[in-house]
Amino acid sequence: MSAVEPIWIARDLPKCSGCRLCEVACSLHHEGRIWPEASRVRVFMRVPGAEFPHLCTQCHDYPCVKSCPVGALSVDKRTSAVIVDRDSCNSCGACIQACPGRVPFLHPGDKKATICDLCGGDPQCVKVCTEGGWNVLRVVEREESHSYKLYARRPDEITMDLVTIIFGEHGERMAR
Image (cartoon, rainbow, N blue to C red; front, side, top):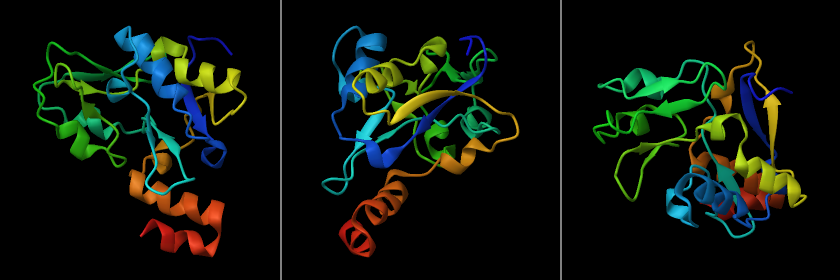
């Protein structure tokens, strides 16, 4: 697959060990240091044993981009990632509220909207996950016919499904 084609990061959440190397790789790439709070991928653990990476799904209709009152968000036509113009962002949080998965966040340093940019087509989180043998995250070619918004869910919703997969019917009680 060429890095110039629109891509998507597929997720196999039950495989996640919670190692958080994806957060480390992301923050090293974007921040130049290990800073998980500034990572564009975030590992959630609402129930012990049910960790998972949470990141932008690049919804086909991009509600975050549409909600920005100052036009600070756009879509990279090459990768399909949401790009934030940090100079234009006014930190209003409209993109966070518009996201069905509540994925964008205000960066802990400059308080600007922060969203996965797919590392320009070479996601570092996927690299480290694959090299580590977990294979939770992997790059796939983006298909226009697929609704990626189906994967844009809040962490509490994902946790509920994940604990049911991992722990069976008792899992749902654990997540409450």
